[in-house]
Image 1 (cartoon, one colour):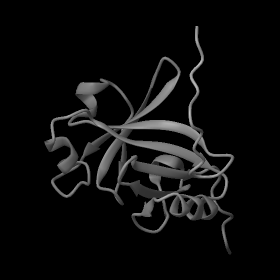
Image 2: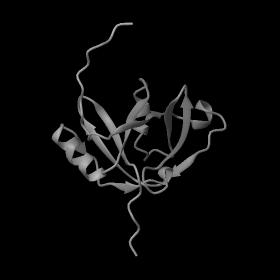
Image 3: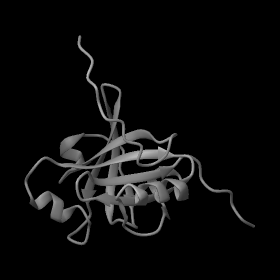
Amino acid sequence: MSTIDALKLNCFGDDARLRHVGVAVRSIEAAAPGAEKHFDALQNVRVAFVELNGVLFELVEPVDERSPVVGYLKRDKMNLYHLCFEVSDLESALKRAKQNGFHELGKPKPAAAFEGRRIAWVFNPLLGLFELLERQAPPQTA
């Protein structure tokens, strides 16, 4: 087996690790019958996680026409929606992403599917949509 020399990009920080691949689907039930669904009110979607040969996939289903994935599904192309990287410091990762040509698509918000850990969405016109997930929830303030 030959090795491939690949340019190594570090867009989100040294400790960023691929967590899952997001795939837009019209129906979670059709794609993965019996998968446990989670409602995400912030994004107006249902999500479910499935593992395929050791790789975690997040199936993202629109709740209604206001869901951000609706337009994406209308394209009738490959439904790869996003890649999610888990990071230890969300703010540092966002700063690093900006330095690498990504645009932040809103402020970090807690996500129901990740026990309240915050997520942030970034976009690069050449690389696409990425979700950054903080590794641990921030400490609760009293």
